Length: 85
Image 1: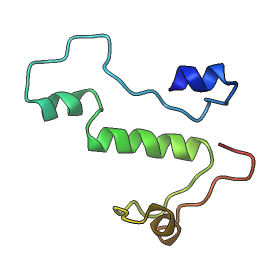
Image 2: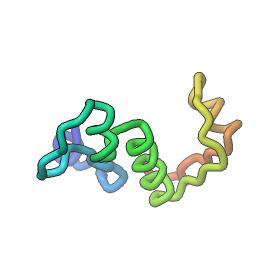
Image 3: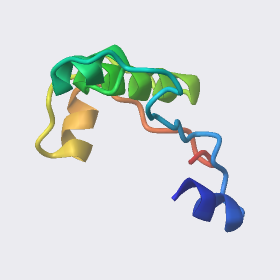
Image 4: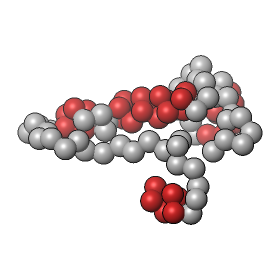
């Protein structure tokens, strides 16, 4: 998707690629391996929050959302400034 967006001339500066590192991952249970490389729920959430803050979004609460737009407003997620993303 990132390559297609880039080919279409879309800005991809707000995209964060996550994946396996180019190194041996220790033998363990799947959830332990994902946590080791930051691909568990906590790691992906941390990467998303870090990127959101980098592009100007601020969070006051990260409660689970059922209705994302409405819950985001209730939880204090500021919308991106006009012209971004």
